[in-house]
Length: 278
Image 1 (cartoon, rainbow, N blue to C red):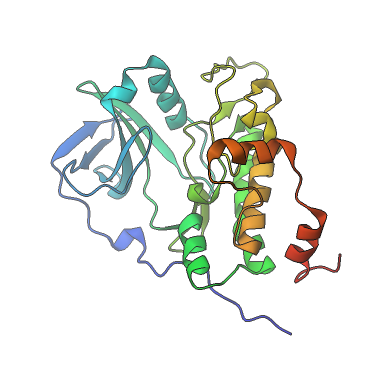
Image 2: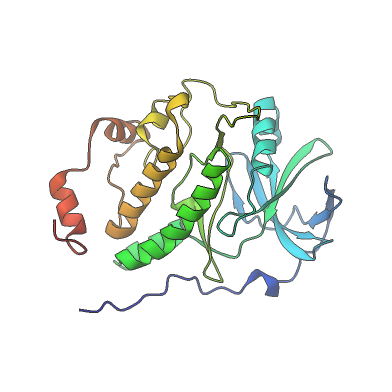
């Protein structure tokens, strides 16, 4: 039976039709650009490192996203170095959010990036779960193939994302798919280049439901490009089933499942029986 095609694109207006924010604060970038934003406006989002606002690039006449680091986070020099590293990630690829600048002004640190209009894969997944729908295999492939293209570009530049999950995949209003948030990306050793590690041995970073075993064990030297593919495989499983394969009521037990258990063969047969004969 031919499946009905379901459009996974969010019904949102492209960013080019949005008006620039009322400028109340101006940042002056290292590239000669200036960025205006309103720090009293409702933020686009909040995270562990800071708050993200919508801003305006006065030279390019385009919207940007401005992450303002929390002052208490910026006390730690490693956090500043990590933010500067994030802003310098090579991102000239259609499936990566473009990083634009890193600005320190008046003792406050800012990361400037491309503004994306759309919905995260996490949000679209949640919407489908709420109405009892799952992604078809064709839909999942159409979303994850561009993600693989973006990851391939990062890996070719010696960068491992280390935080691949649905919250960091944006389905844009124009249907394009982009990888976001390079805050905990790892720079691999590239011949002829000096790299700096900003993660201490023994410290876990990432998300327990998606992190590969070597990342959960904080085995820094064993984290490789295939670690991102493991996380993307968990995402594929979630798209097709509506749930992650390993989950407990707390993060510690979830990580133990990632380390000690495989996906049950019977569960895998049931999960993928709609797509394959196994």
